Image 1 (tube, chains in turn red, brown):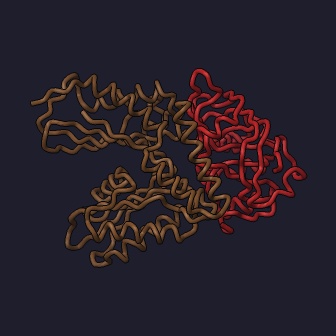
Image 2 (cartoon, rainbow over the protein chains, first blue to last red; image 1 turned 120 degrees about the horizontal axis):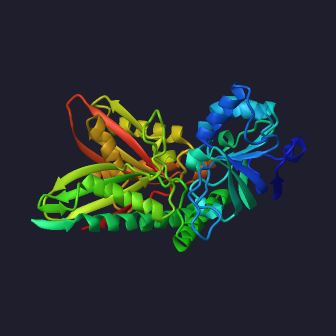
Image 3 (tube, rainbow over the protein chains, first blue to last red; image 1 turned 90 degrees about the vertical axis):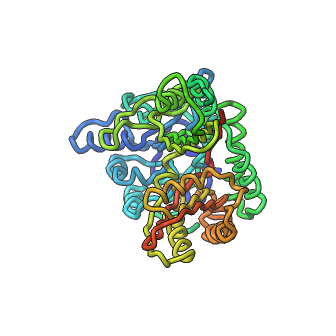
Length: 175
Length: 280
């Protein structure tokens, strides 16, 4: 099984094919609706993003609070297509990989192809299982958004499946 | 007149909220186990096995099954011979939710206003439906409902004589359009009849019925199985990645309706449909 670790470039992802299982290692950034809206407003206003997303992996999740003896609470993927209207701007800024659940709109598939990126899915509703693969979690931006803040996660052997590959092949039309 | 202490309701509700969010109902567990046996596609089987393992981890480590711990729906049945002391019932129920979410490290997923969207930071208010019944008991059904599945529900006001074929067409269309988003294998709650709001409430209440109990109406019991079969033939499968298990069950509730109406609502529950009953 291939291992993906940010920062990623085209070489790292070009052989990955739809349906292939991969393991993520290293850094992921969490972002969901509110963080996407704010990041895109910042880009439009010509400002600087709070994180350098070039070559990075964004994980669509809003985790539960960490219990006393844990790094993070339950942390499974949220529905990706709610991020569709914000995704292109981030891909244009160098985002290389997104992790979520469910299908994406046609214009996102085109954008993924154009910007040579990749979309992965992991298992929705398996937040307790996936949280075990997260070894560190730290809020790095937008703390006021609570569960929707941007966090830097460190993960080990975090499972995912290639859902849209660099050529724009889409698992949800093939399944 | 039986007197029930509001504090007792609050305490039990707070505990039950944590249990609901960390332990999958036994009927849902049984349905997932049964689905593993019938899936032949390795990926579908594997996903279902991870879902079971997730339930095991959540229960033993007392962490939420899913990070979307939902907006809480509380279905309240109050006997008309009950007197609740110690404050306003709605306040008592919301305080129970508040305490449960904090003590259980459950995510706060509620915003104060649909447009202004400020997180209330305690997961209140709950959505509460009251029903006054005979007797001197109180029954609370807690249903922390995630948005991934809630967002794909639909309502249609069919023509009155569209019949079961019309209902079937609409349910299948809703499930197909939902695709992978509601975290299949799903549970399909269907409400038929009443009016606009009654149909949606029936669909929600349908999800509260355990999966191994069929409708009391023979023609609907048969239709539930027929629909389940047709939904599973869609091939959406676990997580929308293909397989035989698109749904774990179909529950239908019906009610009288107007001569000119046939409302149908579909409320979808994810594979982690969490619900618990607390009785006083």
